[in-house]
Length: 515
Image 1 (tube, rainbow, N blue to C red):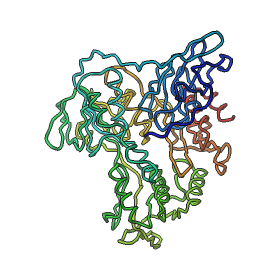
Image 2: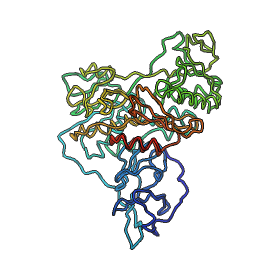
Image 3: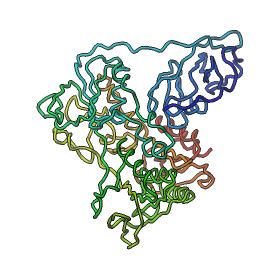
């Protein structure tokens, strides 16, 4: 995704700035050679990198410095201050890195540093196959090359196109605010340059238990020494009469999003079934296209099960301000050629129906391969399955969470990417535990909700600030312990919460939330 560069502000760092203007660990925004640059002092060291996040162009100078890294305030991407390299998704591309010198009492940028090249690693792993072209699979492939793996690398997906920016499919792209050229995560040239064999439209049908190969639907067999399963999840399908009518859609792939857009261009009225994140983001996008939108769902408040009463009421109010009409506490009974009948007997006229009633992990392939499955593909701390040499990551993986002490499965884009990164390193023998704090964001018109942590159940919620004023942090606790925090336009709090949870610093966490 690319946008116009922001206007240059702050000092020209080629001319230098006083060291006194650089408080320890506080970013200074300036520019060099016509580009925005972030300058940071850590002890006796000075760092300078590009100031615009390579994910969605977030302002890194508003981010959080942690050690020799900076974290983006929008979606928590993390960059090395030493090299500009993306250390954690969702960013995939590095930002520019600049050399800095001390000249008397001044810090002066002297020029751009070369892009570091990953050293080739010696490995007896001849071939790695990744099954699934979503977030986890894409990041795993890129990480393997970034870590210096030079063996055969195959990325196999049943989709007809390569990996895409899936969160955008229900947000700006569906709303008509993002062109399609922003949607592919990489172009074909990228895969050729990095010698990644991208096989699209190639469903894997079998992983024979006694063999180290995957079998494709067309009969081809691809050998592997290490295998990553990243099959993702599948939308839950409606089973009511009329569910198979052509105006009924689901949203999981680029093809799905294109189909909804094509239908929206011919439609005036839409019904969204389900008040999930996807359902509500679709509702917002269709309203942005000018459709009349009704949302029907069995719960009494949108998102209440995941985010509680206060956030649910707030999200409902945001959508109602934009003209969405809710029908809550009821389900669809049937779908006809011109409308949706609810269990209450009410009929909602509809030219377009989108079902967002949940997903289920895609575990069939793993189960047939003899891998242990229980509400997801079970993995250990290193994301390895019960079958040696086979790893799993993304929406289908269920892993032991060190904070809750439970096995959890989380359907978040950023978590899938970070699992792909860790799985890739562990396929190379790094023995890196996966212990990331879950994070996701959800966009509703001009309101973005950021969520850090994991709270499947809580006994107390505490709203700091005002949701109505769109300036709030909502804290979810169980037995007095903070499990998760949702924020609205409090990006700094979200970043600091994530960092404190990573450290296990409960005292710092309470201080952050009390501030």
